[in-house]
Image (cartoon, rainbow, N blue to C red; front, top):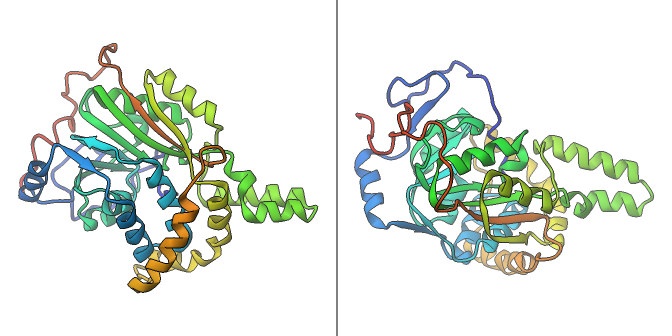
Amino acid sequence: MNASDCMRGADDGESSPLALRPEPAAHEVLHALSPSEALRAAAIDVCVRLNTHAEVLDAYLARTPLSHAIFRAAEVKALGNMDFRRPILEVGCGTGQFAQFALNAPVDMGVDVAKGALRRAARCRAYKWLVRADAHSLPFGAKEFQTVLCISVLEHIPHAQGVVDEMFRVLKPGGRAIVTVVLSDLHRELFYARLCEHAGLPKLGRLYCRLQDWAFRHVTMLPHDDWESMFREAGFRLEHVRRCVSARAAVWWDLLLALAWPYRLAEALGIRCVWRPHWLRRRLARCVERLACGGDETGVCLAIAAQKPAACPGYARSDGNHPLARVMATPADS
């Protein structure tokens, strides 16, 4: 799950060496690719596609803890063979792992509230532009993007309805939001919580669930129907809704979490501590593939493809004159 959320946060006052030009204080723009690289990436294809599941899984196994690879592999598998039309916005891009590992070309724009995460995302060169901003008030005009990606982010955000409304606003008519979100069902599938239940210690199990929500900053854990209602209320037409990350995958994810904490500590110190040779990744991939299968009935995550109808009411800021509304059309001077 994405450790970085898009909640509203105060500016910490640091100046970024990657800042492009003076912008409103509430937003910081980072250039992830040079203008020439961005133009070449735009010329490659009108659509961005998912890499093969084997490629995505190998990338996660090579660079992330096993528990994270299990969860992400099941999420990406649920997205199937979707194409993502440009221009693309990723809300809650974090350090850029999804764009770097799962997509075959750079994303046009990434947004996150965490400055440190955005700096790391810039280094992975999976985005043309990056903006530090609050997802409740995206710094773009209405009808700017054909695709909005939001991968395991909404469960980290209070008042998530406002973020879904913003995704609808910035989408062009006919554009799609591609979203994965963790459900409240996760709690009942956690290995250690279930262990406490079987041991006759239900209060300890509930405490474990609360501690995990705190550790992962889960603030909006809702059931399946509530998420569907949220998207419909925003005005979306639901094209595809599928549960993913099976109960078995969730159990193994929780069981292996203890092995991930040293990685997180090393990551905070700027040290890479995951090393798995190719032969080991191949063996692990076979096991993870089995865990990634299924989940349609018992999945603890929801994959949503929602379309903005071609005919929809107008919105404020629709003239595109917001300070950052044209940032993709007008790259900053180098």
